[in-house]
Image 1 (cartoon, helix red, strand yellow):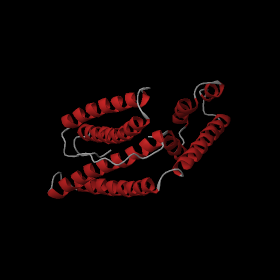
Image 2 (cartoon, helix red, strand yellow):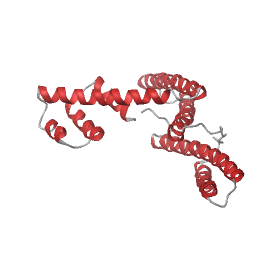
Image 3 (cartoon, helix red, strand yellow):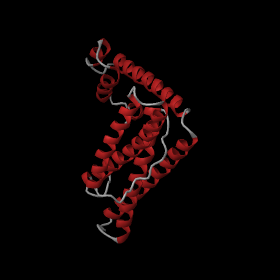
Image 4 (cartoon, one colour):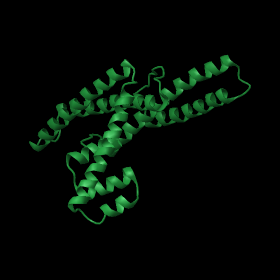
Length: 218
């Protein structure tokens, strides 16, 4: 969870002790933190609330400024991501209701579980591209990743891509490379970085699925 999301969550339900921990994580040590740790009197509560609200507003402004630089393609994907998350929430609720009614296994619940896994993969790709843009300032050419690969195959592809990224990076930094070679290496580097990012996200989603016992309820 991003810092801004943590701050919004706390401000919705401001528990003092949790807020002090969050203050230390976000704003660090110092006199104010030492004062807050003395206890939740009226002054400390207001100081904590003001400090975390100000930090929330600062980060919200930064996020909005960043969003305004997003290309339309990425904005459309993020809107689709919101729809997918709503769908995932609705499916999970239906599954919980089904389990609470005593039905532990059915074809319908299997279909729901597979749909959740598919949504996890899609969200990984969407937010992976957003993270890539946030870090690099551009969207590399889309690369198709084979979602049917086994975790071992994905791991091998990840290691191979890391080798390719290092190789193209060396070409770009080499003083012996011509301008055309640098241009070609840069293009390949972006392509490899894009695929690597997607493979890493797919591996992470696969691991999360395994950790959650194949059906992610969290």
